[in-house]
Amino acid sequence: MNLRSLLLPLLLFLSVIKGKKADEGICSVSAPSCDHDSKPHYVKVTNPTLNPSCLQDLPGFTRSVFERDHALITPESQVFSPLPDWINTSGAYLITPAIGAHFVMYLAKMQEDSKSALPPKDVERFVFVVQGSVALEAGALHKLKVDSYAYLPPNTEHSMKCDELATIVIFERRYAQIGTNVPELRIGSTDEHPLLETPGEIFELRKLLPTSVPYDFNIHIMDFSPGEYLNVKEVHYNQHGLLLLEGQGIYRLGDKWYPVQAGDVIWMAPFVPQWYCALGKNRSRYLLYKDVNRNPL
Image (cartoon, rainbow, N blue to C red; front, top):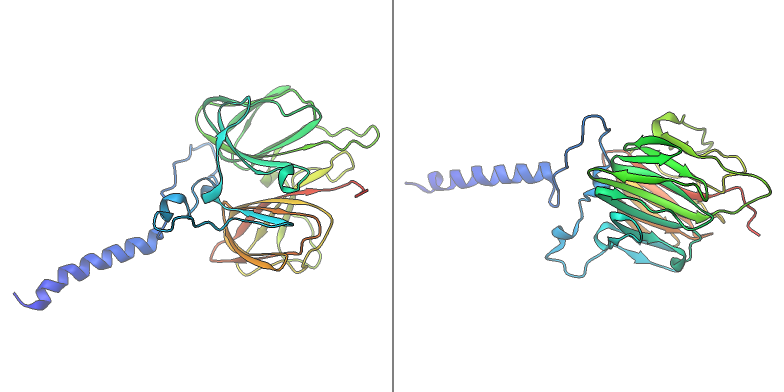
């Protein structure tokens, strides 16, 4: 048997392995199945490419960063534990007043027969579904699927239940009352909202809450095609909490430049310089908290 006949099977085997790796990615994970009555979920949020099982040969590695005026919290360093007073639910608090924010942002993973708890008195809550579905009871029963959301005004009696698995991102803050203005319960989905004009910019923008005075924050959904970027290098008094739902890119925060991907969370303090550019072959989509309609004093 000559050398060529010995090497040929080996070369064929290596080519198959190489093709498989190219298709899957070095740290890829299989996407869990979705039920047919739900939109495909944001798989990279719940199953990020860069997860701890891919980092066994890199002990201590994380892309997470905490600075005075910003933080990047990446999936490999998000710590889940039972949520207080919730049933069969684990949560990861990602942004809280301890970081310098005036709001709370966390991920909640609801399991079989799980149920939510109420936020503290005078605290408003916004819920956005990124995986599975939940049943929301707030005066009436609503089924929230992927890309669906609910805004619960402060002191609104409500509960969320889940019979299987669901992942939701939640924003909470103590409501800043002005006069007799009262926000209303809002339930909807991303695709119900039209694209808004963004003068001087090329990204696509949707606002999930009304822009009227009763609402002291809004939630934006922003889409960037590959290569698109923010034209304005923003510096403003508003705080942000961001979850990258799809895609990847580069985020500038202060004088630092961070590669980011779906599943990453960012906190931006007032007046930190900020800028984003989408990279890769697919669109970037992120969900963004922004406080509005209140005098900084």
